Amino acid sequence: MDLQQTGDDRGSLVVCEINKHMPFEAKRFFHIYGTQNGIMRGIHANRNSSFFMVCVKGSCQVDVDDGREQASFYLDHPAKGLFVNSMMWKTMKNFSPDCVLLVLSDCVYDETEYIRDYDRFIKEVHSS
Ligand code: TYD
View 1: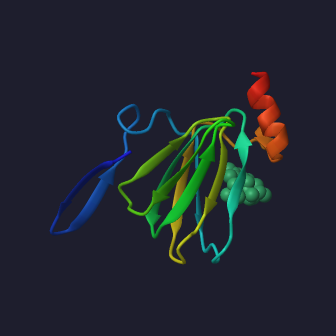
View 2: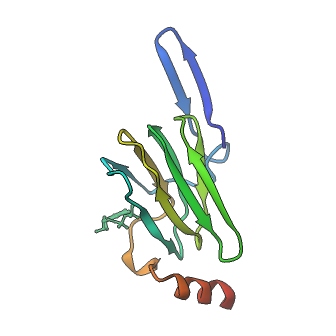
C-alpha cells in the first residue's frame, strides 16, 4: 500500500489515514530498531490483533502466511505500508542496520492471543 507522500524544499511528509490507507483505528504502536544482521522477529500469529507496518527508516522483509498461501513483502521506503490481518503467521527479517520498523495495531498487547507454534497455528486455521 502506497501512503500519501508530499514533499517540498523542506523535505518529505508521509500521511497515513484510517480507512484511506490503514483499515483500523490504532490502539497501540511499537517500533523495532537496532536489529542485528541475521535476526528474525515475529515468528508468530495473533488471534485478534491486526497490524499496519511502515519501515520509517532503512528496510526489512516481512513474510506472511495465512496457513494456505505465503507472500513476502519488502518494506524499503517510508511511504510504503503493509496491512497484516489477524491470524497470519508473520516473520520479519533481513533488517538493514538502520531499520526502524513502526508497527500500529488495533488491539492492545495481550500475550494470550499469540500463537507461537506453527503446527498449532495451522490447526487453528483449519478448524475455523
Ligand atoms: P515479541 O513479541 O518477541 O516481539 P516481535 O514480535 O517483534 O519479535 O516481544 C518482545 C517483548 O516485548 C516481549 O517481552 C513482549 C513485549 N511486548 C509488549 O510488552 N508489548 C507489545 O506491544 C509487544 C509487541 C511486545
